[in-house]
Length: 328
Image 1 (tube, rainbow, N blue to C red):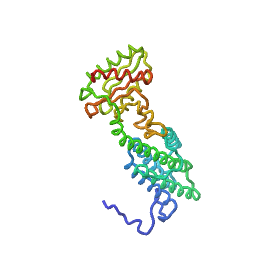
Image 2 (image 1 turned 90 degrees about the horizontal axis):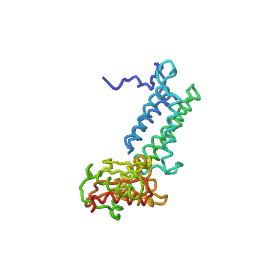
Image 3 (image 1 turned 135 degrees about the horizontal axis):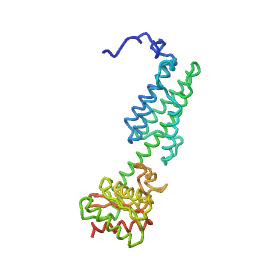
Image 4 (image 1 turned 180 degrees about the vertical axis):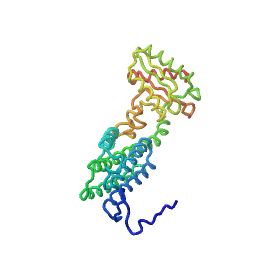
């Protein structure tokens, strides 16, 4: 099968429905620019760091194929079975609002860069803006459904907010990589006598921690994770607050991800701190107050413990009591 047909050698092309027009026709210019936008969005999808952004961009690419098909069709109601709807615009708006709430960066004018992830999204955004201008021009000459213009307008905002989200993730990731080893060296990290926190050892740690909690009269939740932050064992004491369950697990997770006690994060996560905005990393799992402690065997990270249910000081005392199983 040949890829070329030679049918466009005289500067004409076919619209959906068979009508032949010049390649500089404004309708061709409109759907051709949308096609460019799809290519740039696909390029951005290959550069972004988070799976969340990749999935969102893939959905948009599929919607833009429907949009381009409608632009290429003078009578879409007679030919196309599926077109964009107001629900597609509402989805963009909801996603923009959801992500905006997670971003600690200012969402006004920003200079694109320096990361390939965010810069490629800005490139896609500018092409979408151009596509919008072409469609506006087309709508002055032919009937175009308003939902198409609304979708393109929201899409550029959508790509802008995604660029901020990706840049924030890049900053947080790089900050974490640069700081966690340096900070860990300064910490009085818990040095254990075991090379890994298996289930048997983890249950002993939880039992010891619970004994301390009972002694203090403080019902808590206790979580032990491995060196990758995966949950090994968890215990919720009677009357412990429901929210403490998630907090205990995330404290242990945070301690392992950053190789440092979570109590250190409260200062670093302030607006003037080196890790400002880190609480939005890892899907919001990073906890910036005490109760999470990493465990090392020599210099090797083996896991961590997280306790929640009391004051920060009480959680730390209970966590360290539990870890005494492997330190004494």
